[in-house]
Image (cartoon, rainbow, N blue to C red; front, side, top):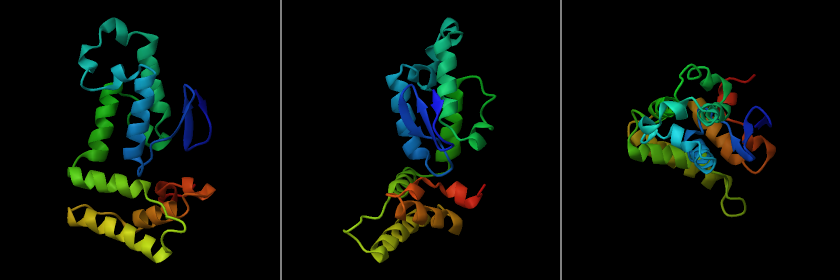
Length: 177
């Protein structure tokens, strides 16, 4: 486990973007795959965590599951969850934070917005802006809301995705360091 930069981490040889306020849906799938592959998912999965024995919870593997989960989360978010001892409780708390009060359709729209990028050579910038605006309107139609700063963050990240600046998160735009 080595830190590559403040937004990316390597966990047991797998590179992953850390969880920030706007990439939960892609982060969730990535970290789940890594934890599953490394046999840590059994300690994180809320559906089976109640079957984990006391001996297993005292094991190094259990501690590593929490540490790997923690490494994959940005410092600002991790501070709110680091004192929870059970990795499955952390997972459930993150799910509530990022998925509660959202309809299933809104969750899908947010996930789609998160991975949008300009289709270079296939669409104009105007078409690209319209595509993002339509997705934001879909979210608002369902009762969701995004601030202008969040929307701007999605525009910038999606437009610059192929470049180095594409890794810029909207939280960095909200709160530059």
